[in-house]
Length: 204
Image 1 (cartoon, rainbow, N blue to C red):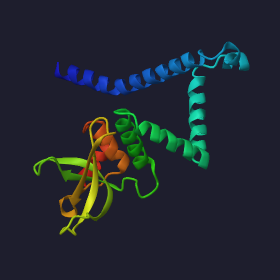
Image 2 (image 1 turned 45 degrees about the horizontal axis):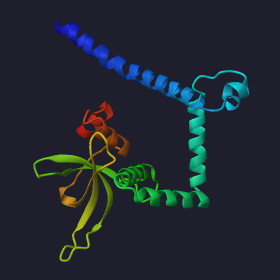
Image 3 (image 1 turned 90 degrees about the vertical axis):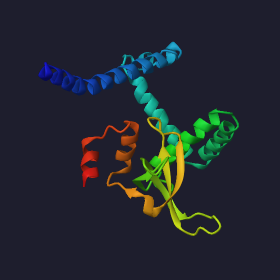
Image 4 (image 1 turned 45 degrees about the vertical axis):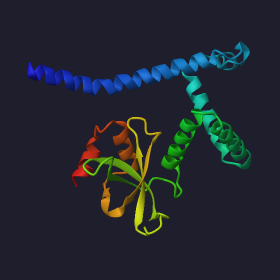
């Protein structure tokens, strides 16, 4: 019975990611097709191209995202995004989620100094426990009588890292991890279920 249970669990672990991925792709294709169906009949791809292409909405959505990205990378797009930021910033509750999500994504995907620099562990919320964090900067905190250099560390919440805590930690209290930013974020999102590559790096 122990062997059968082991094989059953191994099968579930092997098949679940595949089934979830297939189900997600199927859902996205269905959603894109339903979205295109909302267009007037004469403007639907099937009428324009003469053939029905399942999942065409996904490619159209990706194309639209790329166009939006290109527009927002220039002056007019920047001004429009600033206007949207101001509007979102005036809506209670919405501004909290919007600003946190925007700042996190900018930190992850930015190539500038605002990007996460490395993955660390810091004592939080008490000295006996450690949490995963991402270093965002380094320098003395402008507090009278305290010129010690501290690291600014963002502690994301799990499993939704759009919110979290910002800590200013002494360098001596930080444990540096030999993993990439991507692996660190995956570690947070998975709730601590380590990929094999992360486990190997932590053991070094």
